[in-house]
Length: 242
Image 1 (cartoon, helix red, strand yellow):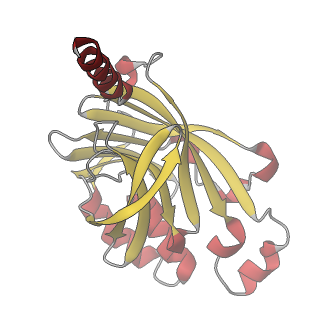
Image 2 (tube, one colour):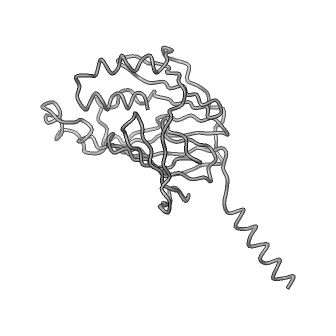
Image 3 (cartoon, one colour):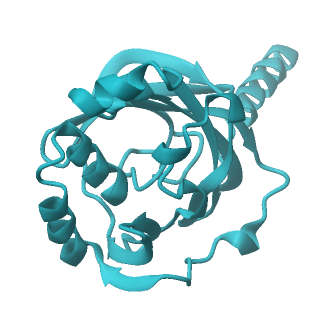
């Protein structure tokens, strides 16, 4: 009887140890965009649609330690690169402090770099029960959120990674977001690997170069400047302030 009890205890401890709870690491995200749909409709769009690849693929890194993270561009698939679409994304950086709910983003806006300081985006999330997916070796649960009052976000998150973060400024779920689809931005992000050994924690610092600005002070100017761009202007606003 004692042997049987010891066996059950060993199995229970093995299961507990198997479920890892991670507080620091680096996650690689593959970002995929449908270029043909993102350029919208109209004469200009029709002229370029058959001259660019339908899909583009880029990779980003998300490095985190406890309550802080840094998300930035890593590389792009050169075969599907569309030069006049990239908007200097190579220099965009998202720094997030989840303890204070603040973020500092370096974004390229109208031929200049800005440091946008704001509170972290508030997203209304609704958890979807009984719908799961494995991503990068982690069991993930589904949630649906709303951005910018009307933009739906479909996310898969894992509570085995403790930080309540995700690509760009996405946050607010009980764990790390490893998969995202935003249909109205014709884009998706999926984690391809998670490294918990080679973590450059010293890299998790706010960006310093750029014109300092409150995001809320800049967004109205951007909306006015892109008001006659149609759906392409809407895409520009979302990309800048996400």
